Image (cartoon, rainbow, N blue to C red):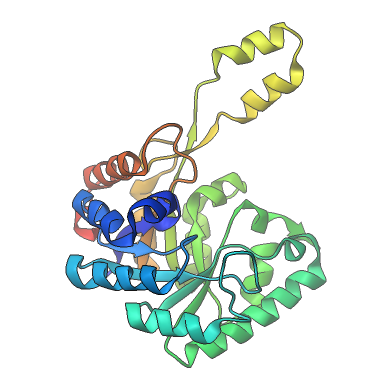
Length: 284
């Protein structure tokens, strides 16, 4: 059964201050019972608390996160694969996701192909343990190399790697989220539910323009593109969620990169209420 859960990146400060168990207890009280772990150190203490949240709160660990190569403060599939597998097995998670390619892979086709080959090799190794590797997109994957989107290059060159489609970043990349989900179909194991909101132009923008401060006006003008709670922006979640179900996505994960003064719990509550109002309450 497909489950709506939470992408824990937006909870990283709460994890650091209160620990995974207490944070997930509050998330569970809102109505969510699945979490994707991201930007949270997988220390023994944190893994213990995640396991406790699973056992005592019934919170499923949808996926863990890792980079392909080493980065400060994180684990990599190149150096830490055995440890990542142990954590996934302990937490009952059958998916690992790569949040972003290395910067060089986004700027160079040879580097992108190397990233694809190494990701696919890691996917094959993880599959031996019953774990699926997935790639999460941003808007940069919809840049083109030699007329092809980077994401299409990844899909073709790394056939053993699944996808985690982020509908906000699809929209920001200039594509239609529903059509994109259908395009990649069964390759999509997870979907990030994140709205695309256009905020109001702040009053100081007009003042900056009147004062001749074009740079400040342009920054404010670009800044009206915002990350929104699900149902508070312009994306068609009444179509996105059913399409995700049709193609067999296992987890739909609510995420909001910026919260504009609200707490993550407030944002998650709004998204939960709006998804319930759309008729998706049975997926929580």
